[in-house]
Image 1 (cartoon, rainbow, N blue to C red):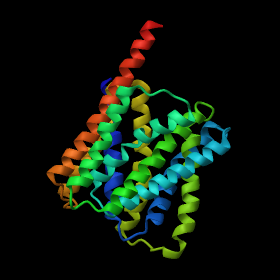
Image 2: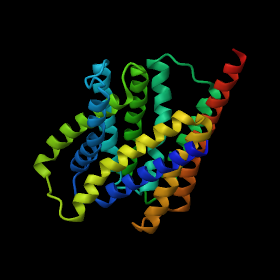
Image 3: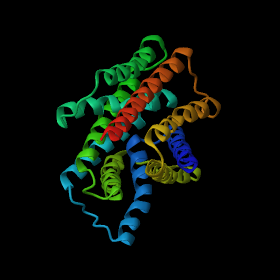
Length: 285
């Protein structure tokens, strides 16, 4: 279990560094940032599939493309939100994606959500209302971009569940990165800025951080208990907030921190309830 926790902490650090570099590369368009983020990950995913002789085209092609489009849209909007609001706030709002995933699951997957789960999810969403209602410095554009990003992230979760185990996880990621590279590259042609010196390293590192963040999160989930491991991914919010304060001179009001805490609390309560319910059902059967 210690190894699983260690992996999740490494993942949170990698996601944090990704956020920091995206925030610091504001001179480039979000399309160019997406292009480098995706291209950097392709360097890992494509050779892996070739080495392991995994069919690159996959089985659920339509769902793989949908997942990629939803993921690309979510990523673009999240990167865009970082232009308007602090990193910790944007990350916290992005993490309410499970709320939208639960709503989509009810209508698209015909799943049942317990009333107490809706209460926990409503608590998490109330954190967003605290952010907007009390933090007068929070720009509405950034809030909306982050919220819509979370909606599309919810669609990503649903699509991945529809794909299930019919396709290798790296195939799913490879589709996402390939389509993001193509679309990001095409959209950035008119606004391309040639990186200089350190900027090359910063842009190319995006894909590396993104890949290892996903890799270690997956490793943690594979060897650890979900209810113990998953809360550690919210360390990303803490790490991002601290680095934003110390490195990028971001300012967080008391209401901003309160809203972020409410969001994480609601999500963790829902997670613990789901894990407890699953364990109880398994014991009864």
